[in-house]
Length: 51
Picture 1 (cartoon, rainbow, N blue to C red):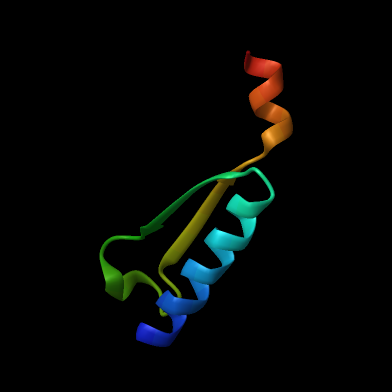
Picture 2: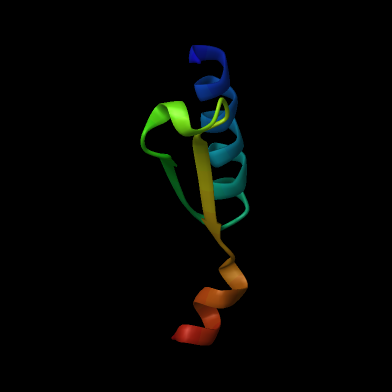
């Protein structure tokens, strides 16, 4: 679980470098899936459309 968290954090930082708004979260309950971590990213292109 720790290793997957580190990988997901690295993925989030990588996406942020390219302008994405990123949120890390988990599915509840944690027993629902062995891969319950979520990396949610919003494209920088969508930000310009909203403005």
